Length: 300
Image 1 (cartoon, helix red, strand yellow):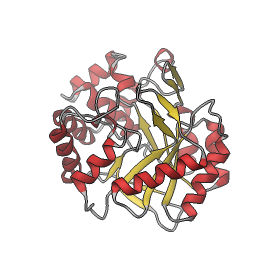
Image 2: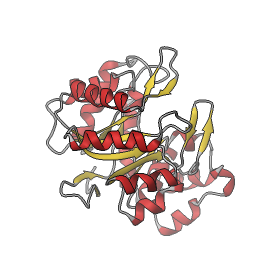
Image 3: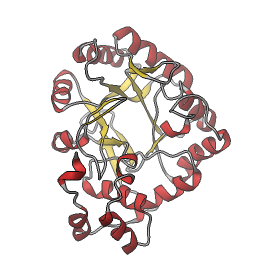
């Protein structure tokens, strides 16, 4: 990725992280239903190694992906890690054998997850950890955030981010400590909160302005999944203009939408990985961005 733009994480702290503004999300490296071992383990390891050789130095993971599958793959493929690599993990959730997703956000559970991440990734400190909020959970948001701050003071976490948060939760978190990043669902075709049978995914569009005002990177998840299914004719037109794929235009749109957005598209196929990273080469114009502005029907 030539001339890759960078983004600063925790820029107001005394230990900021500078990463290239295109990362990789590992969730898709797991088995079916985001559970168990990958179907093609050699290809999964190849993708992780290609991240480094392509210039990606921000990798997103979680100990409940798999379970713990992506962390083990990262350690196998990349340890000892390059000095500039930021491995961002996520805690607050867990999986049942039936592949369901459940909260795991009590202080005890968060500590257990952090220790598990450190052990599997072979690290003494996690550079960045997102606390994943669960709407309607039994543990109050503030109690979970306090537990994260305790772990940070103990040196197990360098920077804290939040994930799947509402506007109010983000503002609450910011009064409690320094919030380095926000990881919410955000895509060209779905920017606001979406309720699904698997739970409620808070929209990045509801917090983007706060992130921009406070120089907090917004890390979007489901950025391709929630767009590709919409079949937007304008995306197809711009893809034709640039002789690119529609997926590349969706990712290029994120890069141009705000300089505080850090995309982390995930895939389990090396050919799609190579396609995704070429999206940074697409330079959309102001007219392109205006043309791609979605209608209200796509925001629901």
